[in-house]
Picture 1 (cartoon, rainbow, N blue to C red):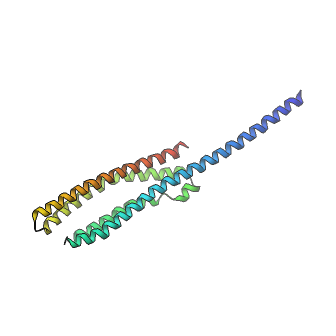
Picture 2 (cartoon, rainbow, N blue to C red):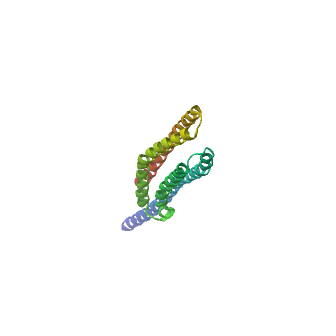
Picture 3 (tube, helix red, strand yellow):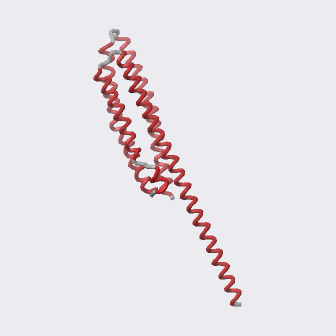
Length: 193
């Protein structure tokens, strides 16, 4: 009788040991899966930064050529270049804090903290970006009126610039909200696990 109970006890211990091994493997798989998903989402965020960088480079090169061709002042052209470089750096530098090494081997809560900081900076960026673009559009309008002999052509160019600015702003705001949503998902994924 005792021998039967000992065998049952040994069998239960073996089953418990097997269940613990399976659970450990599942936790490891979940951790690897979470890190992989986190890495992919951060990679998408970083890809967006480089797309913005190429857009800035395009505006700097093409804009400089067009503005010079239109005989706009060098002060305006220089300020435009400076603004584009500042905008790109203000976007790039916070993204550099999120390192792939932290995602793959480090503490994911640190990554969540860094993404939360990045999200806060993205939200605050509109406070600076919108007034800067309003000032730039005003200066652009002044420059166009200053160099255009025909007032109707100048006004048409300003209206075209405003329409282009509104369309670009709508696309940028859509992209901004999408990035904030992706950051929320990333933080939620990390904190749930």
